[in-house]
Image 1: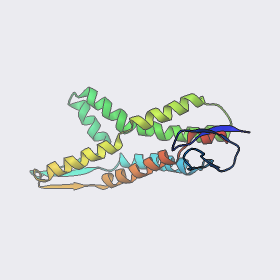
Image 2: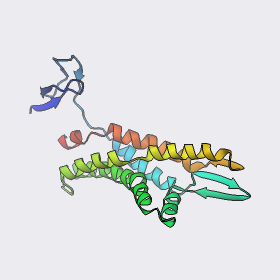
Image 3: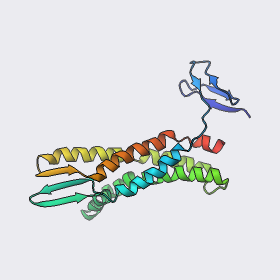
Image 4: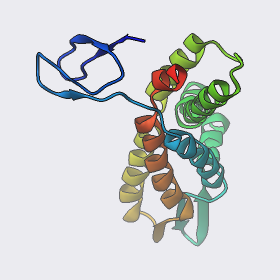
Length: 190
């Protein structure tokens, strides 16, 4: 069955008859993408790391004999306690909900394609994946934590990254790989 594919480099549309094609316009090779389960494994690992990320503290701060530790959920709860409701809701969505729903969307796509049952429509999963991928800003949060650490180093007697920060870095790598390896169209074409 012939399908139309697009060259990723120049945008030319070509007929795909299940063989390797060389783009006549730019000369780049166009591969037929077969989905692998790597993105599913990365998405499941990202969800498990996200649970660990919310258990361990990110940062420890000692000031005047008081030791403060904060977790990811703890930072968001502080926004709500201090009546920064809009900022708290925005951080909750971009740091917690969007990455979780992004990973869940990847998992649901694979479950739905293997079960051959339609739980969600292809359009909902496709749009949901791209929406949550766009709105996940965990990497911006990490930069904010690093900047906070640098600013607080001179003010506090001891400031240190805890296990949660290193889990967050590993989570960010796994989350990025799950999105990079995932091709929603090739999963449903199989």
